[in-house]
Structure formats: structure tokens, C-alpha cells
Length: 87
Image 1 (spheres, rainbow, N blue to C red):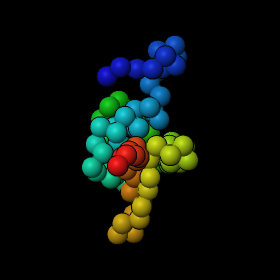
Image 2: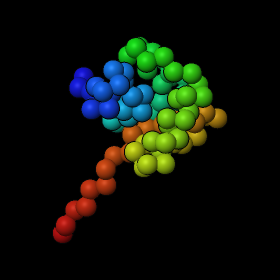
Image 3: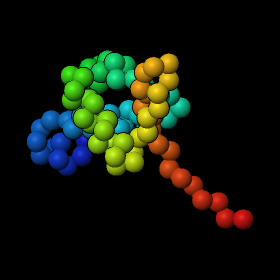
């Protein structure tokens, strides 16, 4: 997995970059916070619930992901780019 310049310079991975990349690579699935914590830990990025919520909030504000409540849990999914079709 390539890393961005900031990660290279700091010598550590940006959790937001890794989380967004994970969701982008799995665009047909939505994950709740607990599931994302497990996924990030499996990639060597241990995040606490508050930290991951902060990252998710930033990604959603930036329009990169979206959320929805399903069965009383908040799920997050990658926001597929809007494609305009000309007729």
C-alpha cells in the first residue's frame, strides 16, 4: 500500500487516509464503528472509539463517506463519485 508524503515525512500512517482507502476498496459494504476499529487494528493502526469517530466525522464533512442508521447502529460507506451522463 503506498503512503502519502505527509505519512512518509512523519514516519507514520494517517488514520484518515487508511480508513478512507479501506472504505474506497470496499465500496459495496457499510461498516459500523466497532467493525472499523477491528479493520484498522488489523492494518496496524489501533484507534480508540473517540479517535475513529473524529476521523469519520471529518471524512463525512469532506463528502468522502456517508452514514446511515440501520438497526439502531450508525454505518459508514464510501461515497461513490457522482457520474454525469450526457444524452
